[in-house]
Image (cartoon, rainbow, N blue to C red; front, side, top):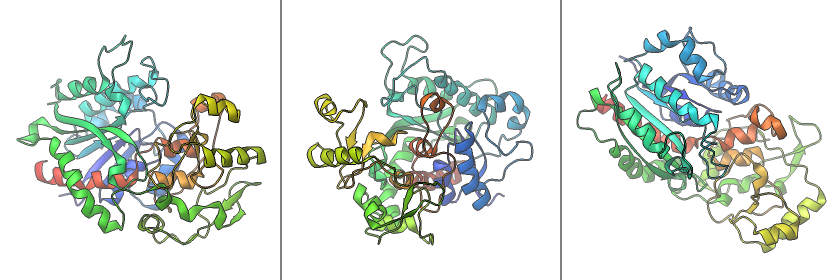
Length: 410
């Protein structure tokens, strides 16, 4: 009998959900992530530092395209049946996201079918699927599926196909800010259990249990149900002091100030580093800092600047949001210059981004800090890795509830 519940992470990114599952006592078998930089971050933290995955000998320990895995290792994947408790993850969301262009023709949308194929081959006992809120909204000009994509996935998973008995599934929108994460981030979450073992189980119970457990869970961590932006990152201010950046010549990095909240104490833990990882401050020009200071003093917080104000400040950006330290942050994206720090005239550092997404401070990020132009379609720098992630604090709560379901019904 296995001592730990096992899972596979698809479209794993830099490891946000895997970190949450690690903290809740799960054991990873392997993770599939196409981008080399995102995988490098996951590998450094969860494979090398935490020995979290029992990586199979037949699969090279590197970044992979899921479609290559499906084509090259179908026999090995079939051999995993009845040995995998859970498959987690959601395909890239750019084609569905309201923060982007919402393009149904985006090739990344086709990865939904790859996800479904993987589930049907491996047939885990439980599935956990995550995607953006836009996944539940019908495209204005549907030419392919002609339906809301969340319904497409639900229908496909429920069907019995060949050797796969299908899944009993339930999905709904969840705001991570209601689970201690200092960010208003609403995502579509779907949970399913294989029909041949489901018996009378209702997957809606997952969401009811998740909500019922949150207060006790967060109290055990010293965290409030609602965490403000200031409570999350006020110990990381530029005003606390700077040193030369340990990983980038010509930049300054921040040092820790005193902790000001239970959230900060939990995020820092036993991390003994005087310089937080990836806490490199941007080299803003004086005119940029002056503009940001004026915006912070005069513009409405947590709202993107109006076209009138953008013109006044000479900004051509689609989104410029000065944030309020007294509330959870707005949903952070992969573009750090979409936001202005709540009390300092600058954008956030990577470490502050990580705090807002609830990555603990020992979790180190690899690869470039930023990229631009055509390289944005090929590279996933540190800010993007974090902006694409599932908050580990939410993932840990998910892992606790899924363990209960797996042990009780599977």
